[in-house]
Image (cartoon, rainbow, N blue to C red; front, side, top):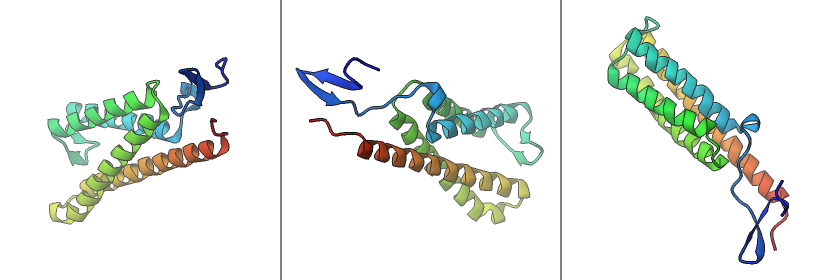
Length: 154
């Protein structure tokens, strides 16, 4: 705890700090999702380079694998870096929206492309997108509750 009780002193007046960072041991739901989904995407991206039909179900290409690795690296950065929680929450929102759009679009076009593996892949993208959006919403609710509970700086 800082000598000013969690507050900053600027120009002779004390104000409440609004940007919160947490130790890695007390991660928010968005950080947990960023870490977990990123580890899945690292596995999927590397597996696609090793054995292109991932798990024998879906044919991949190098661009698809690189996209998974890029998203995974961003997720690991926002999940593990000592940044304000808002960064991880924003990443979870963006990743969730992206995955949900990819998954739903794929599910709508999957009957045209045929293949149960592709439908499963699109459903998993949509589910991970919903999970990331739910984690981001939980973080935003937690932050709003913390702001309501903390006394206002005078």
